[in-house]
Length: 54
Image (cartoon, rainbow, N blue to C red; front, side, top):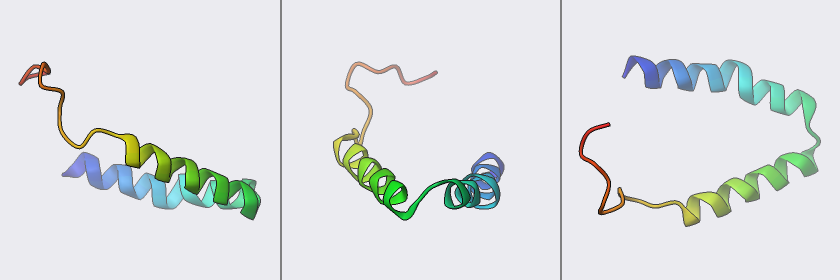
């Protein structure tokens, strides 16, 4: 949970503000659509042949 919380904090405090400063509204809209398409195609569960451990 600590790593997840640190990741979220980094996104909110560094990544997202940087994107807003450096990108136009059109660019942000394009990025949003690309993320939506990628999420729609992303698997929702591990591949059946995936190992149980890393």
